[in-house]
Amino acid sequence: MRVLTTAVIAAAFFTQGCNLINPAETVPTYIRLDSFKVKTNEPSRTGSASSRITSAFVYVDNSFIGAYDVPSTIPLMIKKDAVVTFGAGVNYSGLKSYQYLYPFYYNDTVTVKYAPGKTVNYGAYAKYTEAAQFRWVEDFETGNSLTELNDNSASDTSLIRITDPSKVYEGGGSGQIILSTTHTTSESINNRDITIKQGEGFIEVNYRCDVPFEIGLQTTTNGALYYEPIAGAKASESWNKIYIGIQSFLGKYNATACRVLIKASLPEGQTSGYVYLDNIKLITY
Image 1 (cartoon, helix red, strand yellow):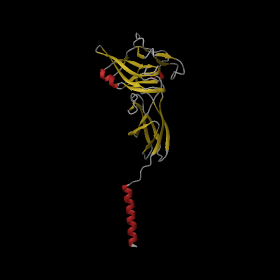
Image 2 (cartoon, helix red, strand yellow):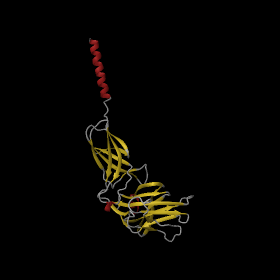
Image 3 (tube, rainbow, N blue to C red):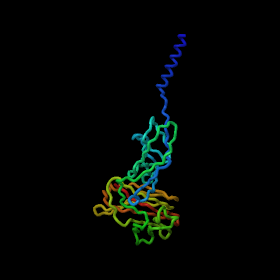
Image 4 (cartoon, rainbow, N blue to C red):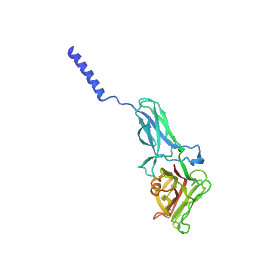
């Protein structure tokens, strides 16, 4: 009996020791982030609610747990109900490898019930922050504030407003550039100086094109005119959106005003090309 009792005690101690060394793992509660979109209650200030949020910066009870693609199924290692916050991540200047927490969108927050092994489906929404300053918005609804930069150049062509529903992204109008072997380039600039401030700044653009194009900024510092391309977009058969960071340009030239330039050239071997644009915004604080 003594041997048996000792063996039982030893086995019990061994089992307890294993549990101490390898404690039971927490079974996660999952949240399925199906989508992340933008909504606006004041389109006269913000313009279109179009967006392309590609990732979510996720916080659980204010602790950052990681950045996840949209859509994703996200494990939450919680032991009680928790507040989950989603920050909107975008491709910085079109770079998929550079996910950036967009500064002009509010986060979205939801309370998730503790349910180990269960999955909650959720669609997140962001709104533009109250502090966001929309310095320039061109949605081509009532006109076109972009003009040809080199109107004396025979090879250059204008960016014009169109109303063809098959070519318009949303609303009643979009911008169009048509390139050909006769007009191989297009350089357009907005027709007034845009007042800006240092710090965070982005240009948003919806686009569809079969040729690449670039967007840049022009500013005057100490009487000298400076231009820099900021980002480019590749051909996209369907409507896309790009968020272009302009912080480095603003800091480099200590700019207080600028203009936006949009350039496109017909690629070698191509006899025609198009660029459609909509909802161009320049946003700072």
